[in-house]
Image 1: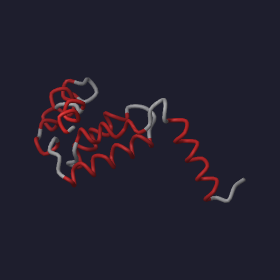
Image 2: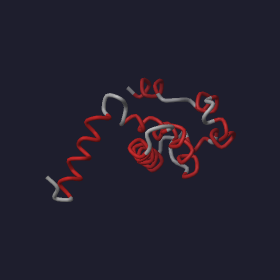
Image 3: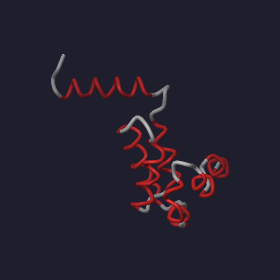
Length: 107
């Protein structure tokens, strides 16, 4: 199972060759950004989910750049932005609308 996950996650070379991430240059090749420590993966997932919900475009490049800046795990940051995609987008935002109405006591 771990090997399948490693196959699905982007490699440092694939991320560095991406035209949106090329500007990060050598910072993207640092080994600590690709190591799966508990803190780095948790921070990367939090960054990815945050930007997955926050902005509708360029989620993956922005989350990768912030992961590099905060020394988080880049693959987990890039993968966790996919929590919102065209299939999950309507139910997620409908649920957010319902929770907001409940919190504000709106009908």
